[in-house]
Length: 281
Image (cartoon, rainbow, N blue to C red):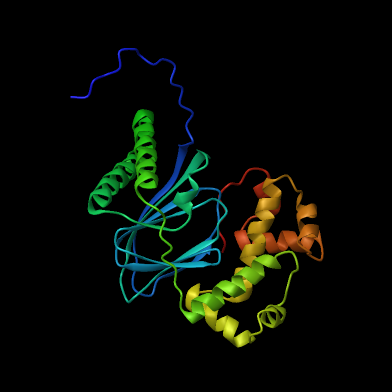
């Protein structure tokens, strides 16, 4: 039996590294083998857990493949897509939440293959969160219990796992990564598809094929989404719509406003005034 110290230690203050302050959404998705979600960006943290089947996930320029029992966590303002893979019909659980503070970097650097025990534990937490959302009368203490359980689980995962880089490393996946990185490097330049092809020393048709295969969208739409994400970041830091339009090399603030509304369904002023959830359309 372990002997306790004779003197008691007092005033052990604990400053939480992070805590969940709001649960945004909870989803139980069942997709067919041809499902493709073309992506979004938002200020929430997003936990994606694969119950069964297989999915391919893009996270900015990275391409991951997740199978049953795998989990990935998207940080705020990361552009991410997901699609069915390997001719499976995936069942995927998704929770989005606002977090105060920052999750440990390890939790955002790759994929976590959960043990059978951890899978069971997370399924129980997810069911509890789902039931809380499904209730007509949401008890505040139960909501806190849900967020506390979720926080404790992620702390446990961070301690017991190192993020795995389950990246797709095929030739086409590496080409896709190179093109997306070039888009990011030239995010302020408002490039044409022909200019992107020239920078990457490839053809326009090859870039189109890469994006159709790996993100289910067109390269210029992806580039526009990246530029829109950068616009959101700039406005979050206090830039006006006109300043953002100028920084991103738009021909005019009016054209930027039209572009932003076409991409998100909302004008820039709606985001500046506090529209936190942005989904690309």
